[in-house]
Amino acid sequence: MTQRIVSLGFLAAALVVLAQAFSIPQGDAYQAVGPRAFPLLVGAGLGVVSVIGVVQAFRSGPSPAEETPTEETHSEETHWPSVLMLLGALLAYALLLVPVGYWQATTLFFVAVARVLGSRRLVRDVLVGLVLALATYFLFDRLLGITLPPGLIRLAF
Figure 1: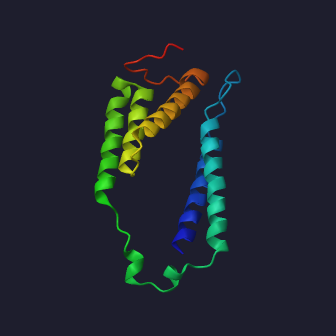
Figure 2 (figure 1 turned 120 degrees about the vertical axis):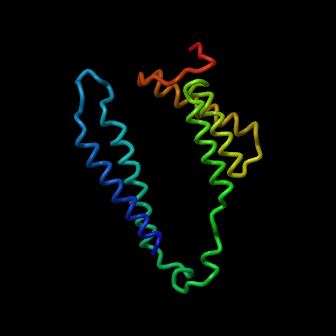
């Protein structure tokens, strides 16, 4: 039942995002990407994932845990040290973003989150974080013209 409620809630959120995105003015004709493009993209993505979740939630019947509640269904408790470490990593990311730079801070943030979530492969985490950070940096800063903080090490290209 919980999965059904959550999936329907996300579907409702997707509809709200899409409705609000369509209310954004299109912008000038000379702009390649208008101000409503990204909200539409996010709303459409959320809608697709939500529909998949709704279909899966209603296709499968109630789980055995939902049919007969026992004490075992509540055995998974929140691991608060991990939550606090993730919040600390997010706070550090927010504080380091401008002085250190987008792609550098994002790489560090990715590595920190991977470590908190249990990864012990530091080299892989650094490489994946660096590739993702540089890819998003080039997408926004260079292709879309949305300036991101360059930070300590400015990219030559």
